[in-house]
Length: 391
Ligand SMILES: *Cc1c(COP(=O)(O)O)cnc(C)c1O
Image 1 (cartoon, rainbow, N blue to C red):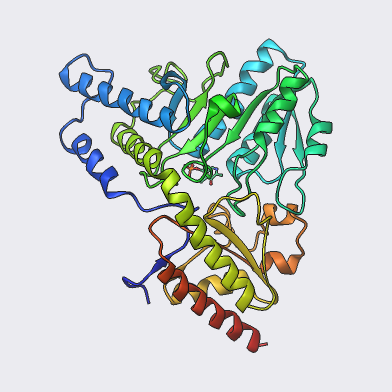
Image 2 (cartoon, rainbow, N blue to C red; image 1 turned 120 degrees about the vertical axis):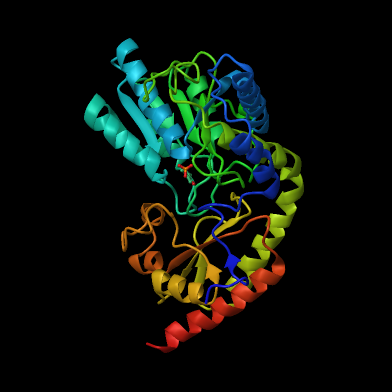
């Protein structure tokens, strides 16, 4: 029953591309196809577009344009940050062979550090999280050592929407005068909370376009001036030798436009999203018995709620909701096609198997309305009841 009345509540997986973004991209698909490395007018035109976009992206996170490196998305940015830095530090300070990440990182961080452990012989330590869904600061403080070359903790978790205290984590490193470098996967934070790298002071930060109404397959890594990385892709030396390959010009232009739009509308959209999220949470908790929100209600972004429904299977629920045109998720889009693999994030929260299997994530976008949520909750209520009555 897919039709126009589909209610899309999976904005943490991807977002609709803004029509202004599409308009900005079209000229670079149709007319300005030159290679930015070419020394002619067509080449110069795309070079100019690249530098304009670099500046727009940098502004959204308070960086300098020359600290922005374009990549193919959040996944590659995380890989470049972690593998690129580990390769570089191994040569300069081989004794600093420990990496610290939280237990609830995205797969693109967790799989990259497994690779580093295996191929570069580093030791990876995992910071546990509290039942609130926030990293355990005491554990972090104990695990952080002078041998820790790199810490990677996400700014916002993609499955439960909790905000991680990365600024206090960075301050601990500075206070101890360690040389430890701090990377943060800020893919879910971008466009949901204000980010200023001058204030938070991470050394590296990953962002992605398609989570903020830009095209897929494009993202960036912020690398603070002075931090040395080795490339993981080799070739013509684009992106200051850090990421070879002809630049994905039209996508970069789209990403730049999406950042420009979000810079203007962020403050305005936060109360709107908050109102939508509050409506969703209060109705579900008040009207559906045995429902709970995973992760704290305090330190969270306003568009991502992960519920557990006692005695109901999340995947069955999802399928049924989809039949009614309501599109949600069981958590991480990247892992939900591997059926039945329990979420590492919800496990880390200490939830029971029952709570984990009964979980479902609704992530709201700025295009959603209260009217849509009203319909979604009504149907959710009905479907949960039906499943329970079947037993
Ligand atoms: C989506 C996402 C990524 C991956 O970004 P892509 O651009 O899809 O590769 C990484 N980290 C988090 C937290 C995400 O939500």
